[in-house]
Amino acid sequence: MDFTERLDALQQHVAATRAAVQGAVTESREQLEKRIDQAQGDVNRAVQNAHERIAQADADARNKWVQMKADAATKMEDVRSKIDKRSRQMDAKVAAHDADWAEADAADALDFAEWALDTAQLAMLDAVDARTRADELTKAASS
Image (cartoon, rainbow, N blue to C red; front, top):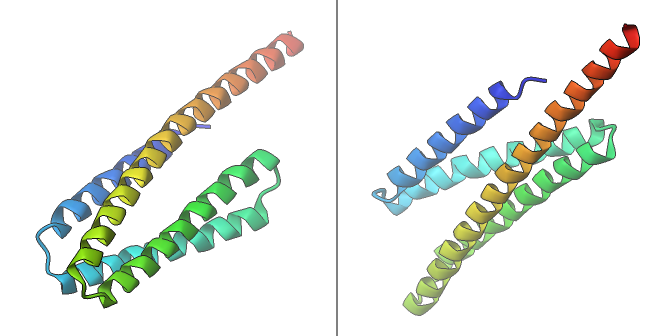
C-alpha cells in the first residue's frame, strides 16, 4: 500500500487547519461562530465516517484505530457543547477560566495529534516491512 496520498491529504488538512486558526484570531464572535459551526459539521461527518468504518471493519487492529478516531470525534462534540455553554456565560472570571481551559484542551489535542502522527508513522513503517517480508517469502517460495 502506498501511503503517500494519505500523507499528502493529511498535510493539506494540517495546512487548512493552520490557516483557519490563524484567520480566526482576527474574526468577530459572529464569524467565529460560523467557523465553529463549520468545524462541528466536519467533526460530525468524521464521527459518521468512523462509525461506518467500525461497522465495516473486519480486523481487531483496524477496529481499534477506527474506535479511537470515533472517540476523538466524540471529544470534539463535547468541546462544542462547552463552547455553547461558554457563549451563555457573562462573568469575566468564568470566561477567563474557560479560555484557560480551552487553550489547555487545544494544547492537549495537539499533543494527541503529534502522538497519533508518530503512531501512524510507526504503523506505516510496520506495514511496509510486513509487505516487504511477504513479498520476499512469496518470491522465495516460487523460486
